[in-house]
Image (cartoon, rainbow, N blue to C red; front, side, top):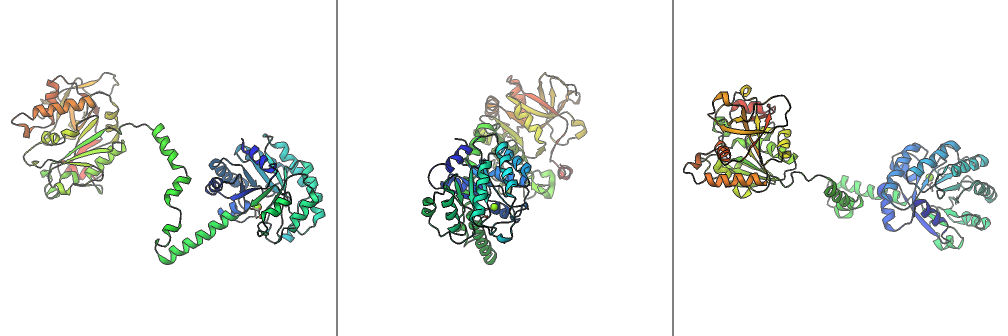
Length: 534
Ligand code: SPV
Ligand code: MG
């Protein structure tokens, strides 16, 4: 049933119905799940929650925004307290159209003058609207609605302003004739006399609505017997929230502690439940790409980095601080940014100094007498499925990793074509590729032809940066190659160029991604200084 039909049905159910105040999406949701069949979007409460007075200080579009959040959060109908309609008939009829668009089922307007004042503030001094002008406003609103079930409730303020039953009845008849779907009979008396007298004289000509804020001790059976259709509990969520907030805030302020508060307030989990956070998690599983979540990273961080002197006396170079965080953490951060959760770090030198959250550590305790492949061999059991292997002393821009990951080839490496500008020192994994790097776009794959520190310079097309991505098949090839090379007497001296040469000799294809800079390795103090601003 549409919300408008639901509200109309409440007015005509033939028994006494109740709706409850809410002033934002959260309170609306609470009203709904408690079992109420409708919501009173109170002007007093909405303005109070916004920190302003109930004098049309919040503009009508600001109220509309609040109502939209309330309507989005719930499936039961909302009756908006539309004050005096925010202007003349023209403003009021536009309000109706906007409310329909925002999922509000009904609106109530009162026969006072814009800007209005709350009925319980100096009521007797409040001027009433001209009856005919107000009737015209109601007619314009009824004419403006697109949905035939949208309801306009006319609220009579004559009792509030000090008038008697006759004036009330005169106005009530005019508003009913103008098309009002129901009349709200407001009274600020401590007893229900006025509303009961009106109900009796009215004789059920159209549904009546009451707001027993002041005559709150009246049993609802009295309204039932008087033939009232709808009771509005008008502001009690707002008032309850004020009391709760004042108590909690005062306690925390005075005690500088949460101990006396924690189990008296809703849990954070309860907020998530009310916000329907579970639905978002399910939706994320359904709609977000799961890319790379099953990919693992193996980071080789066993070496000391003796060229760095004092800096790596007590900790390995992977733990050197780069711009305030250890190099290793930066590296892991890049993997995590690409949704790689499963990270294995091979430690060796000063292994107790190597720490990182949520990673699996593997130790190469013979780091002093072994080289790269021995460290990789220690992590052999993790060489399964999609794996990225990285040196632990490099930093690179995220796109480099992202491009490797997006490439379905079994083994893909990143090669810097700008090796000459870098003037690399120490052991460098120079590579010869199937063709040299060019700025011209080509769809042809570039493949690895040779790798080694001693390649003749005229054969060098670039430098491997220490980052390789393997598919499940690729990691099997790498794992088998490491096992095979492990049989060699000189295995402890072997490095990645030996591995790639072995793979090439086996006929395994190694694809090359050319890059031009955007990475660095930390081999000496100059590198370290440069890395700070990377
Ligand atoms: C409101 O809740 O804003 C009302 C009802 O208009 S009352 O404050 O009782 O006038
Ligand atoms: Mg109000």
